[in-house]
Image 1 (cartoon, rainbow, N blue to C red):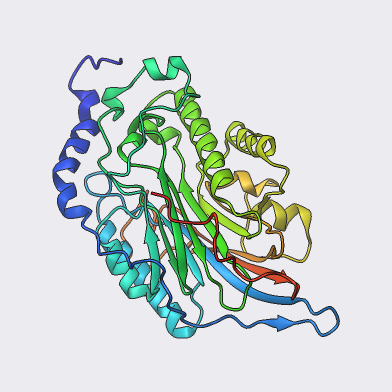
Image 2 (spheres, rainbow, N blue to C red; image 1 turned 90 degrees about the vertical axis):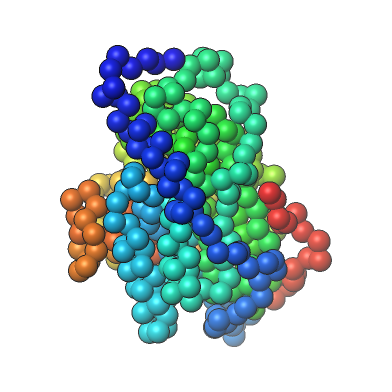
Length: 384
């Protein structure tokens, strides 16, 4: 175990200790609507091809890491959260709001103000602070288990929840949550009960359900521990994510996923994630940033990229897995909230709503009339 030679290395730990005392006020949550949630704000328009009989609809998904970390880790975030809620409300007034929003780092209690302002009637969150798993999985290396960085936040317990939310204009009929193993994390990331949140959406007019998954994986530079250790934690979480997905996914239903995968400029992390999935299943997985720049020419790309591999330019990724009957493809991708915002507090030297951009994607979902309706019994159920 690392031992600090002086008080100076305790600085961030001291802030974490202060945070524990403040969390009672910072993490008060409003009650989650009971399942199944049945409200439909506006059904999508279903188009039928007169020649083939193919049915199709368009839906949009926004993922956004809102950087709502509590004080003293980050200051002045409440104003930014309220501004995000106001922006989503203004979009709703214009009829331009995303159909679905997936939020990461929604730690502060002011997230409830964002939800109320945004007008999404259906929403779920989790894992919560107390939804903990055992310390380790069987796959955790012994060297990783035997070493710990207490002064960098490891083994202090979970002082925050996962910060994950899914908001929807359409009914959420089931949800699933699972935290990562309690000590399969690295450095200061261990203070949050990171994990996976999934939800089954009854899209009006579409057969079956749409399964959504969001997550927030272990970071790199901000952990305070060696990069090799944070890489092991990340791979363990990828293993957990893949196994959870493999167990919960109903193969007949399409999937859209998104979140903060913390793989920016980290080819080793991305290669492991892609390789791990290919071992489990031969089902294709599409990453929007790869699909829209490499695989097709008819995706409307409304954002600039820093390199020829835009999926490595960011931590924030969206993608999909096709269902047996309902096909999915991205038709538009854009960066939202990526410019200076009047009235927003500074974060990392920029006057923006977050230190992340929002990633907006519009999808086309299509199926034939022979596709069966939702089954009475499904593998998609609440998992706590």
